[in-house]
Length: 340
Length: 239
Image (cartoon, rainbow over all chains, first blue to last red):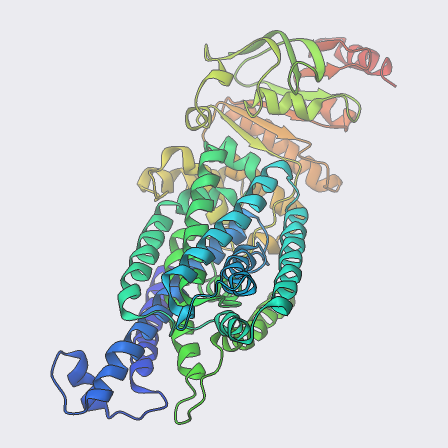
């Protein structure tokens, strides 16, 4: 009965995701006819070289990045919410994003303050990716180590927020010392975008997210047990510490690498698990993990289409679009739950 | 089957909480653990459950040293019900009970026919057929407690440990839970150990009493012709 309903939901969401994915390839500031897009994607040569470039160099990697970043961030958010037993846990709250921002800020801003600024196209380079990754890992490790000392999840969340606040303050100070060029680069990165990922990098993002998501399926059983809390989980036969380390590893690799490649993408990791629970009416990670993958991919693809504001020359910050769509959804989910 | 000799409990050598614990229990025993707040009842229960190491002495369950076997193996021998209240969104009672099958399922936690039958079995024993499809978070306190006990029962362990299982419940629910526990211990021949502050109910239902007295001695009293007076005497030292 419920399995049938879930299957239908999965099929419907997959179709929606496919449509949203294709929409990313079709829509943009430059109008390209459907037939031409298909021709380029199926490997045919078309007359208009520019169109071919737009699709293969910009829209396709961007669309893939949205697809995989959405899936990965959502799974990461789901795992953090279960791990910390807190509905407002997510990459943003627990410092991964502020850690990544810190790494990037040091890389762009501090380098410029010391006159070492790397030159143009800085926001898509491997340097940024490495800087963001190390920042994310460093901050998350701090919070993770603290979480073993503090059993109170609220305390951990508050510490996460405080560290984030402190980091933002340091970044602001760095901003006031840096050049206009560096400042602009940093702000552009902090807007978040699936377009920074170029065709040579997309392979790595796809590979990391795929590995992370497959790994997540193996974590379904420990995650389900952790819903009961550490003591029950342990009495049910789970080795708490190794299980938690695996989960943290998985979630921080996913969120950290996605933030490194795409910049901070707000609210997806927080909102999608709530939508998934509400749609599929379950707490079982065997269902929630694939649900988050499909829903997250779908939502990020749609947000990417919105951000490209088809028909105009404007490109809106993806981070703003995901936050604008995510925040009301979270409020709606909470209100809906309380009403029942 | 379960026995302790001169066992001490606590958190490391420097933080001994209680020592000189001697007890024995067999299948079918329903044991009430009594003592004032803060004396170490929960710590003792956690230690018996293998969730924290003992700080001295010996304890054995069916010739096994519970503190020396892996968690996955231990979960087939001991199940627990905690005082802390569960808050899980969007989980049905049936899915919660199914989590009790964890020690027997594979890496993904998929249930086979045997697991399904055991879940049905437990739902029948606990008389919660009507609750199984409902969401756990929407149940009353009494119903929640039944669901949580059902999860533990589903673990099919010879020993069940419950920390104040009736603490939040009204009179009727308290009776009902204790009746269920009694029938689990006698009909299914399991050993049940639970802590409580409800001395009257404990005297009425249990056949064995473990008392952590305020003078620091551990007493095991069996149900005999004089048990009521003995329990009261052991406790009155603590008052």
